[in-house]
Image (cartoon, one colour):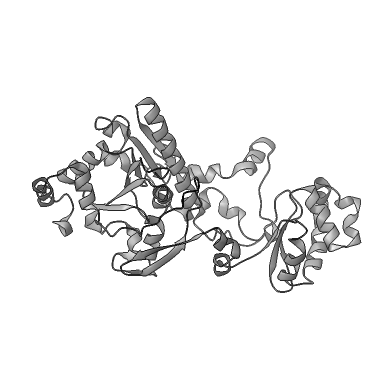
Length: 399
């Protein structure tokens, strides 16, 4: 069996953060059944441009492989009946909605425990289910601003900037996946489920890590650094080369000593640059010296001498270069699925690896594709299924 093959998750999810968290669970074998609202066309991720046609998009494929889809109108009594039957056969209800919505639509533990005392209700929201912002919608861009990330990103004197990726969304998905697994473990041990109240805001604040500790305990005021330099370790930053950039990091004294040897510039051996503390104190003198040296050769030439010397370093790749890096390919980080519209779809693999069983990948589901699977799982007779259809459980498209 695959690691999570004995876990079933009912996912009331859409777009990025929620589906990103559950796709890793699906890749590990969890039976993830997406609930898609038929009246609005299901998960909005199906329509994200530019690579979208009909109800298919490469965005949706990225976040929903290995899952199942059920079009279900939770606002109808018949749709609610199907949902509650699924809860009785599931380990977790997983959602990413606004903080006040889970209670409004009846998917909290208090509202579902009568159906399944062991159900784990995992809600990933923008701001959590309590607090003054609980009713506000939360998006990655907004959270990067609120949590101080944008203020720290970019060159000194420039405008605030977000990360090039939706890091709060993706980190929030990982946090929710960890919480869900912990909740299921506890529920199986204790026989009682629970709510898991996760938020993008909590995730973003939590990821402030040691700069927050420094501020709370020593008044440290984080600020942007030139060439993305580390706030305390010198040197650990970008350096311009003759044709681009190279990242060099001396996170241990031995790396600095190796760098001094490789660069073979006598002034770098002076006592004022001999320790972490000294290099930080004299950074305004040291960094221009290093910048001048690195600017004399192209990036490939520097990597050819830095890497063999065991000095942490790397190029600044663009995305195409990162995807064709030999290490990317050697680690099997590009996976393929077959799709009726797109043919072979190539995408990045989950970084979550458990054991040595090779992962299996199945394309993302078409909307409502798994009604038959769900009907069989729940033991619905043809007559009962027809009655549910007629009552609008699956939306007019399926009626």
